[in-house]
Length: 416
Image (tube, rainbow, N blue to C red; front, side):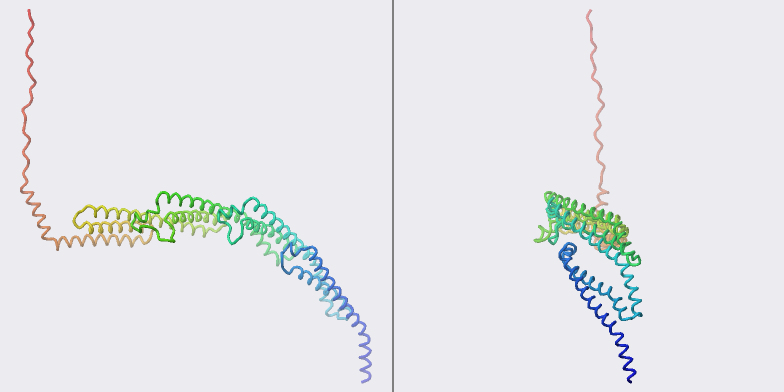
Protein backbone atom coordinates (compact mmCIF):
# COMPACT_ATOMS: atom_id res chain seq x y z
CA UNK A 1 0.00 0.00 0.00
CA UNK A 2 2.84 2.32 0.90
CA UNK A 3 4.47 1.43 -2.41
CA UNK A 4 1.34 2.47 -4.38
CA UNK A 5 1.10 5.75 -2.49
CA UNK A 6 4.76 6.42 -3.09
CA UNK A 7 4.43 5.73 -6.81
CA UNK A 8 1.33 7.95 -7.06
CA UNK A 9 3.05 10.76 -5.21
CA UNK A 10 6.11 10.44 -7.40
CA UNK A 11 4.00 10.45 -10.60
CA UNK A 12 1.81 13.32 -9.46
CA UNK A 13 4.83 15.28 -8.35
CA UNK A 14 6.44 14.77 -11.73
CA UNK A 15 3.22 15.70 -13.58
CA UNK A 16 2.37 18.67 -11.40
CA UNK A 17 4.78 21.09 -13.13
CA UNK A 18 3.24 20.22 -16.48
CA UNK A 19 -0.23 20.78 -15.04
CA UNK A 20 0.82 24.11 -13.61
CA UNK A 21 2.42 25.04 -16.93
CA UNK A 22 -0.83 24.17 -18.76
CA UNK A 23 -2.82 26.29 -16.28
CA UNK A 24 -0.46 29.18 -16.83
CA UNK A 25 -0.86 28.82 -20.61
CA UNK A 26 -4.64 28.74 -20.22
CA UNK A 27 -4.60 31.92 -18.15
CA UNK A 28 -2.27 33.61 -20.63
CA UNK A 29 -4.48 32.46 -23.54
CA UNK A 30 -7.59 33.86 -21.87
CA UNK A 31 -5.90 37.17 -21.13
CA UNK A 32 -4.50 37.50 -24.64
CA UNK A 33 -7.85 36.46 -26.18
CA UNK A 34 -9.72 39.07 -24.13
CA UNK A 35 -7.21 41.73 -25.11
CA UNK A 36 -7.52 40.78 -28.78
CA UNK A 37 -11.32 40.88 -28.59
CA UNK A 38 -11.29 44.26 -26.92
CA UNK A 39 -8.76 45.57 -29.43
CA UNK A 40 -10.77 44.36 -32.40
CA UNK A 41 -13.96 45.84 -31.00
CA UNK A 42 -12.22 49.16 -30.43
CA UNK A 43 -10.78 49.07 -33.93
CA UNK A 44 -14.18 48.42 -35.45
CA UNK A 45 -15.68 51.27 -33.45
CA UNK A 46 -12.93 53.72 -34.41
CA UNK A 47 -12.96 52.89 -38.10
CA UNK A 48 -16.80 52.69 -38.12
CA UNK A 49 -16.63 49.81 -40.59
CA UNK A 50 -19.89 48.37 -39.33
CA UNK A 51 -21.79 51.61 -39.92
CA UNK A 52 -20.29 52.03 -43.36
CA UNK A 53 -20.83 48.45 -44.48
CA UNK A 54 -24.00 47.23 -42.82
CA UNK A 55 -25.39 50.39 -41.20
CA UNK A 56 -26.40 48.27 -38.20
CA UNK A 57 -25.89 44.66 -37.27
CA UNK A 58 -23.53 42.28 -35.41
CA UNK A 59 -20.36 42.74 -37.45
CA UNK A 60 -18.33 44.23 -34.57
CA UNK A 61 -19.23 41.49 -32.08
CA UNK A 62 -18.72 38.79 -34.71
CA UNK A 63 -15.20 39.96 -35.63
CA UNK A 64 -14.24 40.39 -31.95
CA UNK A 65 -15.49 36.88 -31.06
CA UNK A 66 -13.66 35.37 -34.02
CA UNK A 67 -10.42 36.93 -32.84
CA UNK A 68 -11.06 35.71 -29.29
CA UNK A 69 -11.60 32.08 -30.25
CA UNK A 70 -8.79 32.16 -32.79
CA UNK A 71 -6.31 33.09 -30.04
CA UNK A 72 -7.60 30.29 -27.82
CA UNK A 73 -7.26 27.87 -30.72
CA UNK A 74 -3.66 28.94 -31.32
CA UNK A 75 -2.79 28.32 -27.64
CA UNK A 76 -4.45 24.89 -27.66
CA UNK A 77 -1.46 22.92 -29.10
CA UNK A 78 0.89 24.38 -26.50
CA UNK A 79 -1.53 23.48 -23.73
CA UNK A 80 -1.92 19.92 -25.01
CA UNK A 81 1.85 19.60 -25.40
CA UNK A 82 2.34 20.80 -21.83
CA UNK A 83 -0.06 18.11 -20.66
CA UNK A 84 1.70 15.53 -22.88
CA UNK A 85 -1.53 14.55 -24.62
CA UNK A 86 0.03 13.43 -27.87
CA UNK A 87 -3.06 11.54 -29.03
CA UNK A 88 -5.02 14.80 -29.11
CA UNK A 89 -2.15 17.01 -30.12
CA UNK A 90 -1.58 15.55 -33.59
CA UNK A 91 -5.13 16.03 -35.00
CA UNK A 92 -5.47 19.43 -33.35
CA UNK A 93 -2.15 20.54 -34.77
CA UNK A 94 -3.19 19.33 -38.23
CA UNK A 95 -6.48 21.21 -37.98
CA UNK A 96 -4.76 24.40 -36.88
CA UNK A 97 -2.21 24.12 -39.70
CA UNK A 98 -5.03 23.81 -42.23
CA UNK A 99 -6.87 26.69 -40.62
CA UNK A 100 -3.78 28.88 -40.72
CA UNK A 101 -3.23 27.91 -44.36
CA UNK A 102 -6.86 28.82 -45.15
CA UNK A 103 -6.81 32.01 -43.10
CA UNK A 104 -5.23 34.19 -45.85
CA UNK A 105 -7.95 33.12 -48.27
CA UNK A 106 -10.61 33.91 -45.70
CA UNK A 107 -9.09 37.29 -44.91
CA UNK A 108 -8.73 38.05 -48.63
CA UNK A 109 -12.36 37.14 -49.30
CA UNK A 110 -13.51 39.25 -46.34
CA UNK A 111 -11.40 42.18 -47.52
CA UNK A 112 -12.78 41.93 -51.06
CA UNK A 113 -16.32 41.76 -49.75
CA UNK A 114 -15.86 44.71 -47.40
CA UNK A 115 -14.28 46.82 -50.14
CA UNK A 116 -17.06 45.83 -52.55
CA UNK A 117 -19.75 46.78 -50.06
CA UNK A 118 -18.07 50.11 -49.32
CA UNK A 119 -17.73 50.93 -53.02
CA UNK A 120 -21.33 49.87 -53.69
CA UNK A 121 -22.63 52.06 -50.85
CA UNK A 122 -20.60 55.07 -52.01
CA UNK A 123 -21.72 54.72 -55.63
CA UNK A 124 -25.30 54.16 -54.55
CA UNK A 125 -25.23 57.35 -52.49
CA UNK A 126 -23.73 59.33 -55.36
CA UNK A 127 -26.21 58.00 -57.93
CA UNK A 128 -29.17 58.62 -55.62
CA UNK A 129 -28.11 62.20 -54.87
CA UNK A 130 -27.35 63.02 -58.50
CA UNK A 131 -30.69 61.67 -59.71
CA UNK A 132 -32.53 63.46 -56.93
CA UNK A 133 -30.87 66.77 -57.85
CA UNK A 134 -31.57 66.13 -61.57
CA UNK A 135 -35.31 65.84 -60.85
CA UNK A 136 -35.76 62.10 -61.29
CA UNK A 137 -38.04 61.93 -58.24
CA UNK A 138 -40.35 64.59 -59.67
CA UNK A 139 -40.50 62.71 -62.98
CA UNK A 140 -41.20 59.46 -61.13
CA UNK A 141 -44.06 61.05 -59.21
CA UNK A 142 -45.59 62.35 -62.43
CA UNK A 143 -45.35 58.96 -64.09
CA UNK A 144 -46.60 57.12 -61.02
CA UNK A 145 -43.35 55.17 -60.58
CA UNK A 146 -42.98 56.05 -56.89
CA UNK A 147 -44.83 53.72 -54.56
CA UNK A 148 -44.86 53.33 -50.81
CA UNK A 149 -42.65 56.40 -50.23
CA UNK A 150 -39.81 54.95 -52.32
CA UNK A 151 -38.56 57.44 -54.87
CA UNK A 152 -37.25 56.68 -58.35
CA UNK A 153 -33.73 57.77 -57.39
CA UNK A 154 -33.72 55.29 -54.49
CA UNK A 155 -34.79 52.45 -56.78
CA UNK A 156 -32.07 53.20 -59.33
CA UNK A 157 -29.51 53.57 -56.54
CA UNK A 158 -30.49 50.17 -55.14
CA UNK A 159 -30.13 48.65 -58.61
CA UNK A 160 -26.62 50.11 -58.96
CA UNK A 161 -25.77 48.82 -55.47
CA UNK A 162 -26.77 45.27 -56.44
CA UNK A 163 -24.92 45.45 -59.77
CA UNK A 164 -21.71 46.40 -57.99
CA UNK A 165 -22.15 43.95 -55.12
CA UNK A 166 -22.65 40.88 -57.31
CA UNK A 167 -19.13 40.98 -58.88
CA UNK A 168 -17.67 41.62 -55.41
CA UNK A 169 -19.41 38.55 -54.00
CA UNK A 170 -18.22 36.49 -56.98
CA UNK A 171 -14.61 37.62 -56.47
CA UNK A 172 -14.85 36.90 -52.73
CA UNK A 173 -16.14 33.40 -53.46
CA UNK A 174 -13.25 32.77 -55.84
CA UNK A 175 -10.75 34.05 -53.24
CA UNK A 176 -11.84 31.40 -50.75
CA UNK A 177 -10.34 28.69 -52.93
CA UNK A 178 -13.09 26.15 -52.16
CA UNK A 179 -14.34 25.13 -55.62
CA UNK A 180 -16.66 22.43 -54.32
CA UNK A 181 -18.61 25.07 -52.39
CA UNK A 182 -18.00 28.27 -54.30
CA UNK A 183 -18.18 26.97 -57.88
CA UNK A 184 -21.99 26.50 -57.96
CA UNK A 185 -22.50 29.91 -56.38
CA UNK A 186 -20.01 31.51 -58.77
CA UNK A 187 -21.71 29.85 -61.74
CA UNK A 188 -25.08 31.12 -60.58
CA UNK A 189 -23.78 34.66 -60.16
CA UNK A 190 -22.02 34.48 -63.54
CA UNK A 191 -25.24 33.34 -65.19
CA UNK A 192 -27.07 36.21 -63.55
CA UNK A 193 -24.43 38.68 -64.74
CA UNK A 194 -24.67 37.31 -68.29
CA UNK A 195 -28.45 37.71 -68.15
CA UNK A 196 -28.26 41.27 -66.85
CA UNK A 197 -28.25 42.93 -70.32
CA UNK A 198 -31.42 41.06 -71.28
CA UNK A 199 -32.99 41.81 -67.90
CA UNK A 200 -32.07 45.47 -68.25
CA UNK A 201 -33.43 45.57 -71.80
CA UNK A 202 -36.69 43.90 -70.74
CA UNK A 203 -37.08 46.28 -67.79
CA UNK A 204 -36.35 49.28 -70.02
CA UNK A 205 -38.85 48.05 -72.61
CA UNK A 206 -41.56 47.58 -69.98
CA UNK A 207 -40.79 50.98 -68.47
CA UNK A 208 -40.97 52.77 -71.81
CA UNK A 209 -44.16 50.89 -72.69
CA UNK A 210 -45.69 51.91 -69.36
CA UNK A 211 -44.80 55.57 -69.87
CA UNK A 212 -46.04 55.54 -73.48
CA UNK A 213 -49.18 53.64 -72.48
CA UNK A 214 -50.07 56.12 -69.75
CA UNK A 215 -49.52 59.05 -72.10
CA UNK A 216 -51.50 57.52 -74.97
CA UNK A 217 -54.33 56.33 -72.71
CA UNK A 218 -54.62 59.76 -71.09
CA UNK A 219 -54.78 61.54 -74.46
CA UNK A 220 -57.18 58.91 -75.84
CA UNK A 221 -59.50 59.20 -72.82
CA UNK A 222 -59.77 62.98 -73.24
CA UNK A 223 -60.26 62.65 -77.01
CA UNK A 224 -62.99 60.01 -76.69
CA UNK A 225 -64.73 62.03 -74.00
CA UNK A 226 -64.69 65.07 -76.29
CA UNK A 227 -66.10 62.99 -79.16
CA UNK A 228 -68.99 61.89 -76.96
CA UNK A 229 -68.16 58.21 -76.53
CA UNK A 230 -69.62 58.27 -73.03
CA UNK A 231 -73.05 58.86 -74.58
CA UNK A 232 -72.82 55.65 -76.58
CA UNK A 233 -74.41 53.40 -73.89
CA UNK A 234 -77.46 55.66 -73.85
CA UNK A 235 -77.63 55.53 -77.65
CA UNK A 236 -77.51 51.73 -77.49
CA UNK A 237 -80.28 51.63 -74.92
CA UNK A 238 -78.02 50.47 -72.08
CA UNK A 239 -78.85 53.30 -69.71
CA UNK A 240 -79.17 57.03 -69.70
CA UNK A 241 -75.96 57.67 -67.75
CA UNK A 242 -73.20 55.84 -65.97
CA UNK A 243 -73.66 54.84 -62.35
CA UNK A 244 -71.93 56.88 -59.66
CA UNK A 245 -68.48 55.58 -58.79
CA UNK A 246 -67.99 53.62 -62.02
CA UNK A 247 -65.57 54.37 -64.82
CA UNK A 248 -66.79 56.02 -67.99
CA UNK A 249 -66.66 54.21 -71.31
CA UNK A 250 -63.80 56.44 -72.47
CA UNK A 251 -61.76 55.50 -69.40
CA UNK A 252 -62.45 51.80 -69.98
CA UNK A 253 -61.34 52.05 -73.62
CA UNK A 254 -58.21 53.97 -72.59
CA UNK A 255 -57.42 51.32 -69.97
CA UNK A 256 -57.87 48.62 -72.61
CA UNK A 257 -55.36 50.42 -74.85
CA UNK A 258 -52.96 50.66 -71.91
CA UNK A 259 -53.27 46.93 -71.21
CA UNK A 260 -52.77 46.14 -74.91
CA UNK A 261 -49.56 48.18 -75.05
CA UNK A 262 -48.25 46.45 -71.92
CA UNK A 263 -49.12 43.05 -73.38
CA UNK A 264 -47.15 43.80 -76.54
CA UNK A 265 -44.22 44.96 -74.40
CA UNK A 266 -44.59 41.88 -72.19
CA UNK A 267 -44.35 39.59 -75.21
CA UNK A 268 -41.13 41.22 -76.38
CA UNK A 269 -39.72 41.29 -72.83
CA UNK A 270 -40.45 37.58 -72.42
CA UNK A 271 -38.66 36.86 -75.69
CA UNK A 272 -35.65 38.89 -74.52
CA UNK A 273 -35.50 36.88 -71.31
CA UNK A 274 -35.81 33.59 -73.19
CA UNK A 275 -39.30 32.76 -71.93
CA UNK A 276 -40.66 31.49 -75.25
CA UNK A 277 -43.63 29.70 -73.68
CA UNK A 278 -44.71 32.80 -71.80
CA UNK A 279 -44.37 34.93 -74.94
CA UNK A 280 -46.53 32.47 -76.91
CA UNK A 281 -49.12 32.42 -74.12
CA UNK A 282 -49.30 36.22 -74.03
CA UNK A 283 -49.57 36.35 -77.84
CA UNK A 284 -52.44 33.85 -77.83
CA UNK A 285 -54.18 35.79 -75.07
CA UNK A 286 -53.78 39.00 -77.06
CA UNK A 287 -55.32 37.37 -80.15
CA UNK A 288 -58.23 36.06 -78.07
CA UNK A 289 -58.73 39.49 -76.50
CA UNK A 290 -58.79 41.07 -79.96
CA UNK A 291 -61.42 38.58 -81.14
CA UNK A 292 -63.55 39.29 -78.07
CA UNK A 293 -63.29 43.06 -78.55
CA UNK A 294 -64.22 42.75 -82.23
CA UNK A 295 -67.16 40.53 -81.29
CA UNK A 296 -68.36 43.12 -78.77
CA UNK A 297 -68.09 45.83 -81.43
CA UNK A 298 -70.17 43.71 -83.84
CA UNK A 299 -72.81 43.15 -81.17
CA UNK A 300 -72.83 46.88 -80.31
CA UNK A 301 -73.41 47.76 -83.99
CA UNK A 302 -76.17 45.15 -84.16
CA UNK A 303 -77.75 46.59 -81.02
CA UNK A 304 -77.67 50.07 -82.54
CA UNK A 305 -79.26 48.83 -85.78
CA UNK A 306 -81.88 46.84 -83.84
CA UNK A 307 -82.91 49.86 -81.78
CA UNK A 308 -83.02 52.00 -84.92
CA UNK A 309 -85.23 49.44 -86.71
CA UNK A 310 -87.57 49.25 -83.71
CA UNK A 311 -87.97 53.02 -83.58
CA UNK A 312 -88.53 53.25 -87.33
CA UNK A 313 -91.23 50.56 -87.29
CA UNK A 314 -92.86 51.90 -84.13
CA UNK A 315 -93.04 55.43 -85.51
CA UNK A 316 -94.46 54.28 -88.86
CA UNK A 317 -97.97 54.07 -87.41
CA UNK A 318 -98.79 50.73 -89.04
CA UNK A 319 -101.04 48.16 -87.38
CA UNK A 320 -99.30 46.31 -84.53
CA UNK A 321 -96.18 48.38 -85.03
CA UNK A 322 -94.93 47.68 -81.50
CA UNK A 323 -95.09 43.90 -81.96
CA UNK A 324 -93.45 44.05 -85.38
CA UNK A 325 -90.74 46.33 -84.00
CA UNK A 326 -89.98 43.92 -81.16
CA UNK A 327 -89.80 41.01 -83.60
CA UNK A 328 -87.46 42.94 -85.89
CA UNK A 329 -85.25 43.95 -82.98
CA UNK A 330 -85.09 40.40 -81.63
CA UNK A 331 -84.20 39.03 -85.07
CA UNK A 332 -81.43 41.59 -85.58
CA UNK A 333 -80.07 41.01 -82.09
CA UNK A 334 -80.05 37.27 -82.62
CA UNK A 335 -78.18 37.65 -85.90
CA UNK A 336 -75.70 40.12 -84.37
CA UNK A 337 -75.18 37.86 -81.35
CA UNK A 338 -74.49 34.87 -83.56
CA UNK A 339 -72.01 36.87 -85.64
CA UNK A 340 -70.31 38.21 -82.49
CA UNK A 341 -69.98 34.78 -80.90
CA UNK A 342 -68.63 33.35 -84.14
CA UNK A 343 -66.07 36.14 -84.33
CA UNK A 344 -65.04 35.38 -80.75
CA UNK A 345 -64.50 31.76 -81.76
CA UNK A 346 -66.79 30.42 -79.04
CA UNK A 347 -68.38 27.12 -80.15
CA UNK A 348 -68.80 27.84 -83.87
CA UNK A 349 -70.50 24.51 -84.52
CA UNK A 350 -73.09 25.08 -81.80
CA UNK A 351 -73.79 28.59 -83.08
CA UNK A 352 -74.26 27.38 -86.67
CA UNK A 353 -76.52 24.55 -85.51
CA UNK A 354 -78.60 26.84 -83.30
CA UNK A 355 -78.97 29.44 -86.06
CA UNK A 356 -80.04 26.81 -88.60
CA UNK A 357 -82.47 25.20 -86.18
CA UNK A 358 -84.03 28.55 -85.32
CA UNK A 359 -84.53 29.51 -88.97
CA UNK A 360 -85.94 26.07 -89.69
CA UNK A 361 -88.31 26.36 -86.73
CA UNK A 362 -89.47 29.77 -87.92
CA UNK A 363 -90.05 28.44 -91.46
CA UNK A 364 -91.98 25.40 -90.19
CA UNK A 365 -94.03 27.56 -87.84
CA UNK A 366 -94.89 29.95 -90.67
CA UNK A 367 -95.82 27.06 -92.96
CA UNK A 368 -98.01 25.47 -90.33
CA UNK A 369 -99.67 28.74 -89.43
CA UNK A 370 -100.34 29.54 -93.08
CA UNK A 371 -101.38 26.01 -93.98
CA UNK A 372 -103.59 25.23 -90.99
CA UNK A 373 -104.72 28.43 -89.37
CA UNK A 374 -104.81 30.56 -92.52
CA UNK A 375 -106.32 28.25 -95.12
CA UNK A 376 -109.41 30.37 -95.66
CA UNK A 377 -107.41 33.55 -95.89
CA UNK A 378 -105.01 31.90 -98.31
CA UNK A 379 -107.95 30.64 -100.46
CA UNK A 380 -109.45 34.11 -100.52
CA UNK A 381 -106.15 35.63 -101.61
CA UNK A 382 -105.71 33.04 -104.37
CA UNK A 383 -109.33 33.54 -105.57
CA UNK A 384 -108.80 37.29 -105.78
CA UNK A 385 -105.68 36.69 -107.82
CA UNK A 386 -107.58 34.39 -110.25
CA UNK A 387 -110.48 36.84 -110.60
CA UNK A 388 -108.13 39.65 -111.34
CA UNK A 389 -106.46 37.53 -114.00
CA UNK A 390 -109.84 36.64 -115.71
CA UNK A 391 -111.13 40.17 -115.72
CA UNK A 392 -107.94 41.58 -117.08
CA UNK A 393 -108.43 43.28 -120.48
CA UNK A 394 -105.65 44.60 -122.56
CA UNK A 395 -105.62 48.37 -122.95
CA UNK A 396 -106.59 49.68 -126.45
CA UNK A 397 -103.74 50.49 -128.75
CA UNK A 398 -102.89 54.13 -129.09
CA UNK A 399 -104.59 55.95 -132.02
CA UNK A 400 -102.69 56.02 -135.28
CA UNK A 401 -102.01 59.36 -136.97
CA UNK A 402 -101.53 59.77 -140.76
CA UNK A 403 -98.05 60.38 -141.83
CA UNK A 404 -97.17 63.97 -142.21
CA UNK A 405 -96.43 65.14 -145.79
CA UNK A 406 -94.14 68.00 -146.38
CA UNK A 407 -95.88 71.21 -147.49
CA UNK A 408 -95.85 71.93 -151.25
CA UNK A 409 -93.76 74.83 -152.40
CA UNK A 410 -95.35 76.85 -155.25
CA UNK A 411 -93.23 77.26 -158.35
CA UNK A 412 -91.50 80.55 -158.76
CA UNK A 413 -92.03 82.57 -161.96
CA UNK A 414 -89.53 84.84 -163.59
CA UNK A 415 -90.45 87.90 -165.75
CA UNK A 416 -89.44 88.49 -169.31
